[in-house]
Image (cartoon, rainbow, N blue to C red):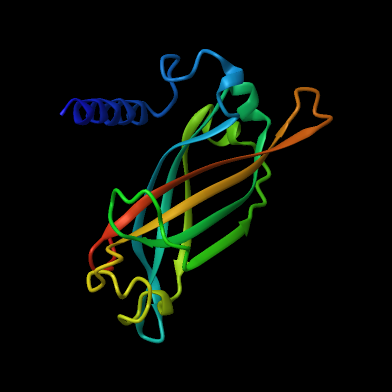
Length: 192
């Protein structure tokens, strides 16, 4: 019961931080060297209809990540270079291990501005990925089997954002990344 209370308080704290639209001094670690240069604090994912293909609905995945840099100065020097989306099915919402991804997409980004210019120290970044019909059409597909399979009951996704962090003198750069996974939905596959 105590663990449940602690988890609930942590969830409420996270929701309170995300509703402010930015990081607060209390939320950031005091030791800058101990925290990562880029942190994905939350990830929300939903299935949306993105159009139609041959008269059938075409679905996609909308990802909303809450990213934080260690400081405004580092956010201004951080430029995203690519993102990776790995789609998996899991045994349930709380499964610690996930099956091998059935779909992995790597996309290069050609951002001309830094993360600091688009969202400040902390903020939301949105990504989308079209899901091919062969991944959700029919019970023989990975997502079509959800709700029918005893082994796989939920659809999950892992987002990894890669970036470069330029040095203060702009002479060198360091590759950095942030990653998080989230359950998209459980039961039968359907648009959100």
